Amino acid sequence: MMKHVLGAKCVRCGGEYPALPDTTTCPRCGGMLDIVYDYSAIAKEVNHKVMRDRQEQSMWRYLEYLPVEGLGKRPRLRVGWSPFYRSERLAGELGLQHLYIKDDGVNPTASLKDRASAMAVVKAEEAGANTIACSSTGNAASSLAGNAAAAGFPTYIFVPSRAPKGKVSQLMIFGAHVISVQGSYEDTFRLSQQAIEQYGWYNRNAAINPYLMEGKKTVALEIAEQLHWRMTDYVALSVGDGCTIAGVWKGFKDLYATGMIDRLPRLISVQAEGCCPLNRAIQTGEPWQPMEENTLADSIAVGVPRNADKALNAIRESNGIPVNVSDQEILDAAKLLGRTSGVFGEPAGVTGTAGVKKAVELGLIPSDASVVSIVTGNGLKDTPNAIKAAGEPVSIPPEMDALLDVMEKL
Ligand SMILES: *Cc1c(COP(=O)(O)O)cnc(C)c1O
Ligand SMILES: [Zn+2]
Image (cartoon, rainbow, N blue to C red):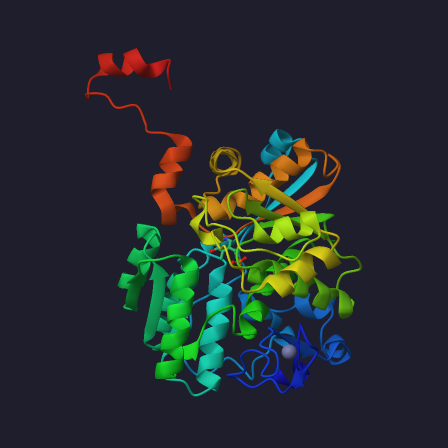
């Protein structure tokens, strides 16, 4: 709650500012701001027993850790408190003893981005805004469109023209004003920034808005609670712009600072080989450089990551492990996860799992490690790539003879 927020601090120059509902980036240097909390005040109100008795089954279960006055008056979707599974079959296939899946693809608009968009909608109401806008590779857009539709906010949404049909269809169904931009994500982002400035819309760009990461961190709070506050050794997830991994790390650090967990996991930062500017910076020790957006995992095809400072801090502070995977490894992970666990992820959704598999194979993590793999988006958003991963079914005429012919192939 806002009474626990001390202010907003620039991650680049250290400048400190009040945390206002429409606060964006550092006025002095343009760096991203980080919301700062009074952890001893939170720790006075929250403990394991308080959480055990709490009824709320959504991301707002952790109100003490969130930068909001309250939840506003507008209706909202039920975001968060997503399923958490122990998958012994997947663990066996990966050669691991303890593997858990956090399925964030079951959120209302079917991705982890709902956590950020739900936060954006509450902050837009606090800011007295009339309209919300963003640019996105797809899921930030569809989650904003859905969460804003529930709350009655009009939205303007800029997507690169390569965004998959499943995501664009969500935007259209949720009644967003959609602008499909013939260019890269970077081009799309730049245009949206110009338009937002010109029209004065509330800005739901993770590159700008410091509250979105606070929404995303709730996935880490849930994971810790679903593990009964006994953290695993590793948490693996896919990384594009870097806001999610930064949020996940913030969530675990918040819990650690308030005595809710007694150790921090190491993060496994998984990017696509064809677009891995953040992991490359970690691996080379050089500043990050833009890369081409060369992967079928559209949600993490971000050549110019806007949350680079925060994401690199998160990976370094957690003593994290960068792992890059090929598109084929991503498709294989989609099939493996589906077949062994019944969880259907979009390519970027299963990239974390692909990274776990590769990290075990390369000996980067030991086989007795405990790992959580976050599935960040649902596979129904991108069925062409799912078919690419798993193939087409056999097709026969409606006759028993024909069935007998193909039975041994099934
Ligand atoms: C946005 C997204 C990511 C990556 O999050 P970043 O904050 O861009 O790093 C991963 N998976 C899915 C499905 C996403 O939509
Ligand atoms: Zn600054």
